[in-house]
Length: 426
Image (cartoon, rainbow, N blue to C red; front, side, top):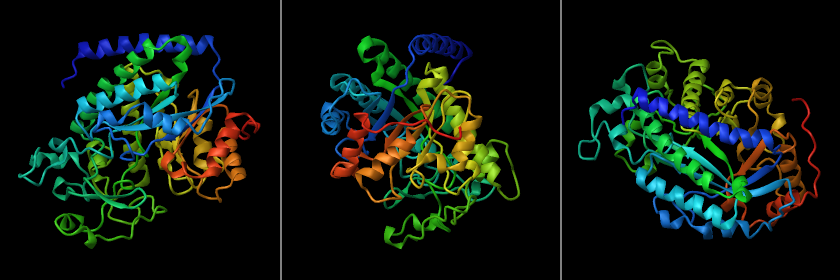
């Protein structure tokens, strides 16, 4: 879709009006509510490719474990990821509408996670540069995927990801490709108005059901979609032949596998030759997250409802900083430091320099301590201790639903049986 100057101006007017409406509510009503969201895992009983599977029942299954307490300052809700390049736009929007309608029917607070970088199966017209027997084939698509050197002759055909187990996935996108960015823009400009229209029709008693939108998904280069040496040669071989060494996360450049990121860095004009640096990788990720945030803001999403999803693996690495921009509130994943995010020096440093009204633990799970009620209460308490932490989102509901300790701990927090103390050091 071609974006004209006239349409851009119209979007800016809509943005200003929508932001004004949201802003009036924020200015006239001090909102210190915090949220604990349970993320529904994709393909676990519901899937955006089947809109009918997204219905009130997937809400009730979760919320039945958490008796509603209208007087509590901390509330439980549901999170869901919409990977807007994974299925057709029509299907994405139908699933989103079902999700929002189900939230209203079940009176459940929601956080909407938007992903455009990890699953882009529905856009072979962007990634298929090598197979003329498949839809979307175009050799020029080399420019839309990542490279292992400074030229599209080094374009990749495959990547790997480990979300619980190692997976073969489509090649990592060139986050700075104009065509890829345009696909993200088109999706965001269709999705955000649907959310705002739904919010607008909510009665005042349910306005608090919409907590926000998150863009990006652990945005980085070469970590969640990595490339093994000679990976292209493995594409037509059995998956059993794939290496299984995984990543060396302390290596902030190649993550212990083949260096990628050349395509994004060159396309952005950050560097065109020589060795990639940590700053180069950070800058490409920062620009992508800023682009997503700016587009969501232009479509009408106010800053206090808009969050990013940054990430870092090595203590203090620069990639953490990519989450901070002028259009949104920063968010990060917490696993190693889920027991107390204030132990993460890179997060603390970014919070000190951010002027956003909130931040969030947009992906969170306690992994460093045994799952006792006491440990869960302590970790939840520590994470929400700073009243600027708007929410934490547990990944995933399916990982805790059969465990007594986390569910009991959440109910203790919601019932205000554990005092939330102010964070120190910010």
